[in-house]
Length: 398
Image (tube, rainbow, N blue to C red; front, side, top):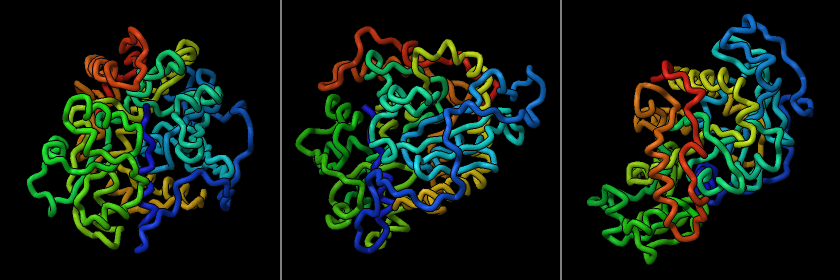
């Protein structure tokens, strides 16, 4: 099952009191920057500079007039490639946590709109695949490989692009308290208490493989730094490589020290996170659109890493517009981009292409999840059931 991204709430607890500023999906309307008109996405958009019908950047008449994408959390720098495609003339629907605007391929208007919906609190913290099946106006959503495998029978989805090569999730610890700890396996060997959110798939994997022991686990983590700080770093804790190291060093006033960490990916659990997925039953109908749209998404991810400033500006504007208690600073956003690049979180796949899946790696995830207690993996599920490289442009990479 997909791990709630509440670890991001650490950035909402920067006051000396270390009390979380927000973790629920409150109903506050906020102050709307520009309220978008409600609708089902049937409105059309002029093709602008998209060129003729055969142009690879002209989506009009091939894709839905508004492509709807459901994310798994608030707008943040990890979603930068997605917001790279949102045109400058965008509207913000603060009541429904949406941003809507022209879908851009670089500086070319593709002739359709994109609607980006926030997840996490905005969807009651449920899995994106569940939200996609409740609301069929959603065309693509962020679905991890582990979620897709687990839901392959009940809520089947197919990943069409992997924006992340590595999952940014980590376990972290205080290097001053534990100078000899360098890996998650070291945490297990030294029997150090690990705090995490309940139902974390990678924790179940670490227990099943003997890396961690049940006796050293504490599932009461609530996203705030209070316990980590009050314990003086004597415990380990989950987080994200793209956020917590910066936040604890720069924004948690009672800490202001480095933390050390290891990516769960580098410790052996190599599920793709936040893949762009469609409902399995919609794949055939969306194929003509995906043939053009997936390469645009690939290039947007490349362009974002090359120059993230504009997308970060959009993300910070949305954070301010929604005004729901979630806090996200420019410092965290810029650090996130640096980590995405430095740690290979965003990178080419097994070759020189960004966004493609390694089928053997997906099979390994299936093999890892199948025996885990409490994970009802669909019988005989295969990589081809949950991912495809059919729409990937192999010439696009970093």
